Image (tube, rainbow, N blue to C red; front, top):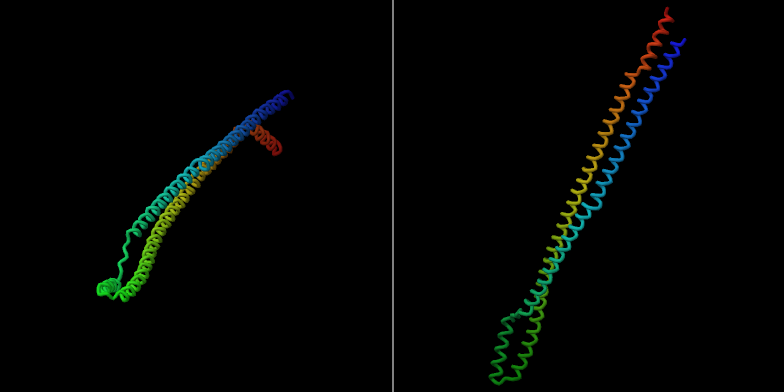
Length: 230
């Protein structure tokens, strides 16, 4: 009777020790998983901070400065263009037609010959023709200016559009890089998590295999079975 009580006591002590080991394993595993999860969240937060507060703002600031510089360059080119056009206009000479030149000479000859009335009438006609040709000259100069101005504006718009397209492409590249970095972190986290789960299962199985209490239970069951058979 005392021997049976001692065996029960020993069995209970071993069961308690094995349960303590199992509880310690579970607690350690849970603590490791919490630490891994917290480290993962901290890494994600740090990466988000790097992208949202450093990389993207720096890129956008630089892109904005480059666009501002290009617009300043365009404004300087337009100012220079206007100044050049004004000088060209000031120095432009109206080349009157041969008809006007001939009529002027004819008017001078008539005046020299004493035909003042006819000369005056012809001068008036020449003056009207000169005004008409000056008007045409002004219109031609304006049209030439508008054409050149339009070409310059188109050039500037194309340069700005190309720059914006370049920046859009760079944004897309940054976005792909950002996604890749987050995917790497997530993949690493999943792999480590799986490894830790596998390690926990392996250690749990080892505890079960090495369980003295379980072995004792198996032996007791075997003895009872043998008695029943006998």
